Structure formats: C-alpha cells, structure tokens
Image (cartoon, rainbow, N blue to C red; front, side):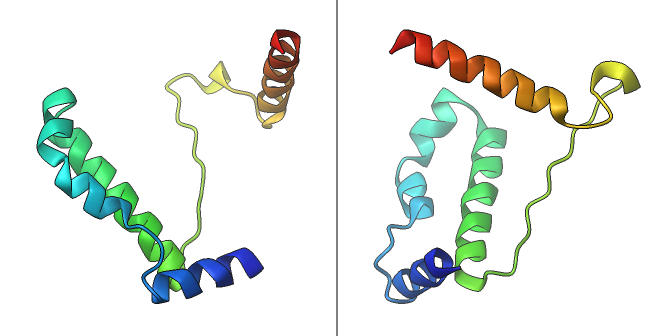
Length: 94
C-alpha cells in the first residue's frame, strides 16, 4: 500500500519515466524487429500499467487456457514444484 502511494505521488509529480514515450521514440525500430501487432500489444501493456499506477483501480487475473483438459492440474501446485526445481538449479550455478 505504501509503495503504491509513493508511486502515485511520483507519477503525479511526473518524476517517474514514461516507458510509453520511450517506446514511441523507437517504435519504427521495434516494428522492424518484431511487427505491428507486437507494437500494439506492447503499447496496450505499457498504457495499462501506467493507468494502474495512476488510478490504483485495476486488478490482475491469470488464466491458463488449454485445448486438453488434463494438460494442467486442477490446482496450481505443479507451478510451485517447477519453481522450486529451477531455484535449486540456480543455487547450483552460483
């Protein structure tokens, strides 16, 4: 809550850099590397993030879609198991 309040204060004072402006400056190059569809999705993402910090009125939902019902578990436990496996691998690299 305090972090969100601080972010809103910085945004109100225009102290937070605007990633959408930076993206706009390099849009032609980004479209060249990826495509127009990517640019539109990325702009939507950046503007949505800005709106969330300015208003605090958005919520985030995660959805997992699959053609095969059994492709994912009924719970998200498998995600935590996989994350733990990757954490152990990272520790082994250090």
